[in-house]
Image (cartoon, rainbow, N blue to C red):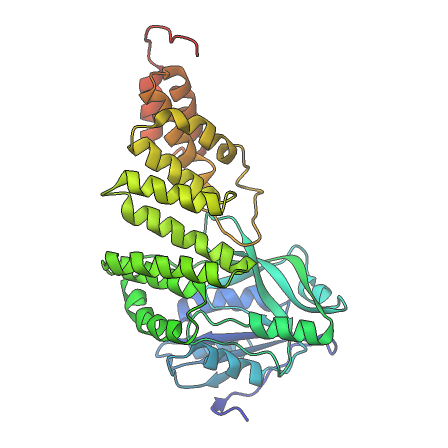
Length: 387
């Protein structure tokens, strides 16, 4: 049986196909209220595991009718999440965090989704940061004692969902319901210090998980331990090759991006080689394509950029979505156009450079640099030789 101090439950309605929101929180009074407002009309129960808040988090939760369980933090995200699952009473679980917001295409969309027969879980749209394109995450799944989170950090429920789907002949559904993440702002140093010991422990248990190595690389790089970050990236690449699947393939593209970024300042040529290797393995990854273009520009190969950047610039960032990878929308717009303008300028094609800079300026009107460059290359000069 679950342990901990439990507040009185509040059941919000809907006697069949009930949905429980399951959360873990600590010192989230600033963000929690808006999260709970976003789910209030879509779920039937809110279960919150508080792992030691010292602010008004519990009062905010109680004001929104949440069921609050106080549980000590044990450096294990799965243990806390599984505690929420054990206390939930709904037929379905919505897994959501305090710094996320639920957005539905129409009222009642969550309950309409779970009414679909033969589905064990739904892939919802997930926007990891403001200004990013969404990807898909399994965030809505059946409540079942066989389904539990695994891993002390970057906990996952995927293995158990796959096992239950196979055992019961169920499938995975897809929904236009969206979760929007509003965190990851400001200095992440404290987060890196917190996560690194957990990541070091986690990769000892599940060294095959690519994302653990990628996040370790990010933490190490954020703490200035660059050589160790590069080593972690290569461990991610090795894990993706040894244990290939769709999720691993999406995650390892981040390792390739970190490898390029970590080599670029001191060795643009090596960065270009790494970008080519990553793009050869993942030819549809747009971030790696842009990073290759940037590396080639720095090595003096500007002539290759127009053809290389054309597929990126052709994408409408506002409607684009990839199932596995989220992209900063600027990749498809201002960043690619600014780099294209610089390439044209280096080749002496001033009119084309000006057009690229003007397009970048139109997408980012607050960026004065784009307007200055557009103006500079639009000024009167001898006519270009047609090419």
